[in-house]
Image (cartoon, rainbow, N blue to C red):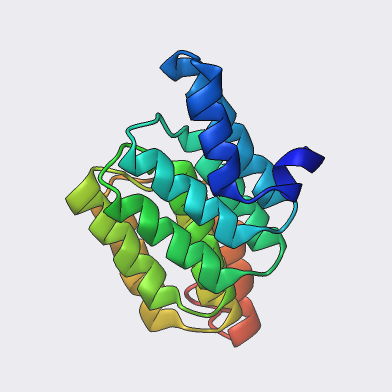
Length: 189
């Protein structure tokens, strides 16, 4: 790990590609591991460099690796970088965007108070990429709406849930009831 962090990425690439002679599957695992090492050590620009290299050289990128990187960015309070990396994932055209990565980015957007943007992203991903949000994704938006008493946006989120055939669960109902009662909307609660 220290060697990966000590040397520039281009030196590591030339060493692995030129000297290894490994099969593509092994090279893919190595570069996915590099993404995680860089991510775990806060070297976020290097993660993008590895991702771009893998995409451009048709090295298989693991969606789980991308999601774990997004979680690291969220944990490090790097909300802008998380949004940027997710955009990079989407624009790459490779199949690395999942409901899990979408949920992480929706949560990031909600943490920043960007509920409308989160809802629009969920709509776009469902229409364009076929990635459907689940109840966990929607809970982030519901929770943010009620904490901010943004009941107009909440109504749009609930309508989107209905359109996507995602049912409220007990936790969601509890969040809604708490939100409505804290605002004095007893009838709605």
